[in-house]
Image 1 (cartoon, one colour):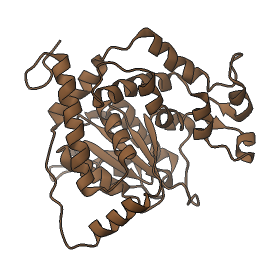
Image 2 (cartoon, one colour):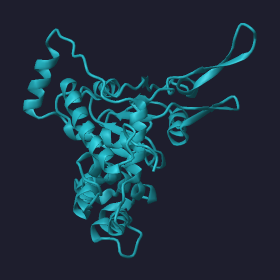
Image 3 (cartoon, rainbow, N blue to C red):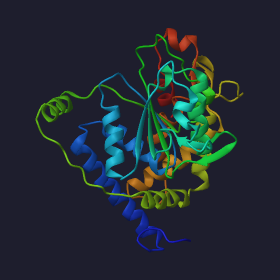
Image 4 (cartoon, rainbow, N blue to C red):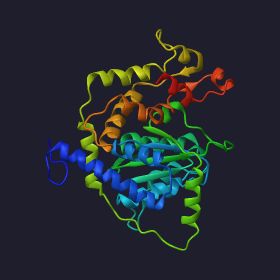
Amino acid sequence: MEELIGGSKDPVAALEALAQRYSLLRKEIARQVVGQDEVVEAILISVFSRGHALLVGVPGLAKTLLVQTLSRVMDLSFSRIQFTPDLMPSDITGSEILDRDRNYKFVKGPVFAHIVLADEINRTPPKTQAALLEAMQEKSVTVGGNTYRLPEPFFVLATQNPIEQEGTYPLPEAQLDRFMFQINLDYPALEDEIGIVKATTLDREIRLDTLMGEQEIKMFQHLVRQIPVPDPLYEYAVRLVASTRPNLPDAPPITKKYVSWGAGPRASQYLIVAAKCHAALHGKFSPDKEDVKAVALPALRHRVVKNYKAEAEGLSIDDILSKLM
């Protein structure tokens, strides 16, 4: 096994270091972002699992602030792209221009950053959405026949507004599948909102400490992939994903009644990797069913399509998934 953390080859020590660093990250982020504990945990799981996340919530819930804070405490480059109807693919990836010597020179676009915030991704046409989604999948962009690698680690955190749908281009299910998690943000609790108002109406600037660098993040990502998983847990995760498919003969009654399309194999892959990461962040050396259940909703909710019966009866995807679990 190659060296992991601080020159140590001991995976147990490395896992303990990851759990400790996670605790410090949570505390440091909480100095800037009040509440949203579950959201912060889900984003950190996606980061250490090499996944991308889709943040769904109404305006004003500190989505942008959270992503900026994450980039600062992890000492990563940050880029924000405001998706608009007139945004072109080259506005994301970059383009070739003629320099003074009449030679073509590639000018990198904002996608060349460690953390890319794709703000309101559903406000731009599919062609431009596809440019970002290709970069997410391939970790590279191709312009003028040349391929350029994106920096590592590389994460896309995209946002969507669930209430304002005029002039939007919803992501197709096949493209939603590229995101490891769909993280739903809700209004803060009363106590948290009071804390937010107190913190944001004072004339002070919070200076955050840098707790991790890109090399250490890549080491932790490699470590998470090495965590062993017992065979029964693989079966449990795959069976859970399969239970969302209404076309299977042994599909649960609730699935046949309320689901029109279920999750594919990529959901099973992300479910296991996320469960590994959840276990590691909470000081465990191997995941169990509780870790799978803890990450199941964000990993599956954007991969399952409910039918008109569920819509008519007011059932959400989360309701259906919770009953399946």
